[in-house]
Length: 214
Ligand code: DX5
Ligand code: ZN
Image 1 (cartoon, rainbow, N blue to C red):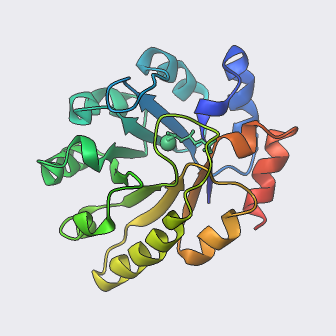
Image 2 (cartoon, rainbow, N blue to C red; image 1 turned 90 degrees about the vertical axis):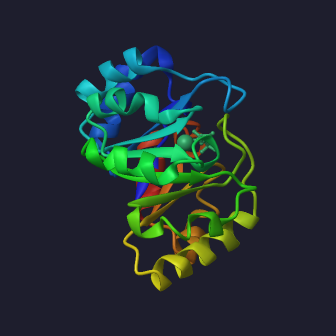
């Protein structure tokens, strides 16, 4: 599966960006919410995403790169979100509670790991998770170079998911392109997020189709 990341879209023409995404082969649409505290950048917030979610026909995948993401569960839910991802590093103390709160709100729950966070920290919650998002770059910006170690993490996570009988999907975000997509799928990824590789292409809709053809 493929999820274009809105962060790399043309913000002057968001309406037409969503229109092509709706008619494309994209599986989900990925929203990156940043706070300038957890990550050194600020993206867009709920007033913008509310308008986009009204016209978006694809399942919405929200990636919270903020501290205390549990404070905004109701706002994320109000977007019609399918999958809410929180960063492990931002809410590790009561991670199980946060996952439960996302489920109680009626959404699927995902936990994101930064490149420096090992997958073993999820051993005791993997059965409660609908998805694990592995960052292929340090979060905060689009267009960065893929960190190769993410591939080994993907293999190891696939093994952990199987061993623990978890239904969690594996999503990879950051530095994904048409050159590394195949090897990531082969390593066990279920869904790839792509910003620059799609929106930076001459024809984003066609780039999206090329990911699906892999
Ligand atoms: C980065 C974001 C990503 C970003 C990926 O912190 O979480 O979703 O949009 O962009 P690319 O695909 O350009 O690395
Ligand atoms: Zn993201």
